[in-house]
Amino acid sequence: MVKDKKTKPSKELPLGFVDRQEKELLIRDFVISNIKEVMIKYGFQYLETPSFEYTDSIGKFLPDKDRPDAGVFSFKDENKWLSLRYDLTAPLARYVAKNYLEIPKPFKRYQLGTVWRNEKPGPGRFREFLQFDADCVGTKNLQSDAELCILVSEILERCGLNKNDYIVNISSRKITDKLFEKLKINSKDQILSTLRALDKIDRLGWDEAKKLLGEGRKDKSGDYTKGSNLKKDQIKIIEDTLKGKTTDSEDVLEITKIFEAYNFKNYKFDPSVIRGLEYYTGPIFEVNLNFDVKNAKGQTIQFGSIGGGGRYDNLVNNFGNLDCPATGISIGLDRLVFALMQKKDFKIKISRPVVICTFDKLRTKEYIEILTKLRNSNISSEIYPGEGKLKKQMEYANKIGSPAVILYGDDEIKSGKATLKNLKTGNESSVKTEDLANEIKKLL
RNA sequence: GCAGCAGUAGCUCAGUUGGUUAGAGCACUAGUUUGUGGAACUAGGGGUCGGUGGUUCGAAUCCACCCUGCUGUACCA
Picture (cartoon, rainbow, N blue to C red):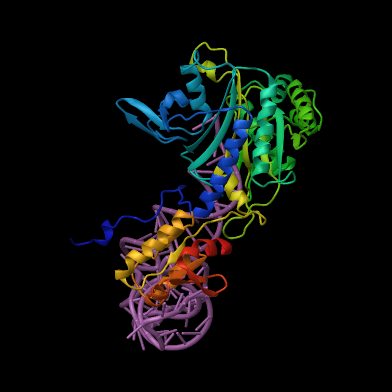
């Protein structure tokens, strides 16, 4: 078969998708095991829903012809549009609506799953990522909201973050709702663009955010963003209201009281917390990291929050006439892992096998005897999987980070003692084959 | 989507008044050592210089368009 260069498959990945290697995956596993333990402790059920949903079930309307994939990945199957889920909250609302009569009320569930977004990736943001989501459905009791913040904090601290590394910012959608009422801001467009501008205060600062509230703003690349055209006195009232460190918001006051009862202090009232625009109706929370995150080139990047959530009392109701208040929180696990990898004091153990070097194919039986002994002792081990000289085998063992190699050639077989070489120190010792497992455990 | 910057070997990058056969370090392969890695030395393989078109006797180098990446910004249920 003639190979034409032009027909060679591409080795590049699609935009926004990445290969994830062992270190990252092991840290992710560590995070997940912490999550599961905490969720059991807090009394949440484990749920899984499918990757695909009908597009309209998860809050997307039929894709239009020009951009059939705006925001999500979709395709048409038997005349119905399907989409890959873009979060775990919308599928939960669908699940609750479908199983409304059977589920306990309130219903506390958690879920871990990959979600997909068809949008431009940024630093530490991809188009495919793993999300953790915990929700409490079927009660207006704000203890649920508080519990979600506390459980996320416990997860973060179990993963190795300390109280200086993160903070939970809380606010309530009702604060901005009231404010807009007072200022007679009624147009939906203006409300949305104002919320967006306020959402950027922590990143841009008040001076820049105020430009977005007014006429518009030019960013440092020279790009211009239109503002929401509020009047100066309106902007002033917004600024005065939101800059206050205290609030008369009932939501916030009540949650604060519950936090106090838990003796939980790692939170801050921050009225610039806005989160999603569409469905939140009450308390909203956002989890932010307090340390710098750098990219592969060592530049500090705008990392944003690693998670957040809030109360959405109307979402389930969209599926029918179901009065079903709810509150939830999610963490972007890959982003958390990305951040954890940058903490200097964070270490994860990666097990690499002891390599049994091969000298002679006729000795395969002897190698397997040793291998079986080691594996029966639960020691990660392998017979050199390739072919080649001892030097090549040593290079292999060194490259994979193996702790030791075992040399068992004719000389050793005659004497019944294998040579055990510690690859860290270079020391070699002669060990009876039945003692190998114990000797290796000493150097691991 | 918009904007700025950038694409030369697997990786990091040199390479301007446009001129033989396009370089270095690391990595890779082989050897110095046919039973010893992480050090050294020797030799070797590997590039349509992001793509297409143009200017020119001649283009990695100049021009146009396109593609891709990074960063910011917008959108983000």
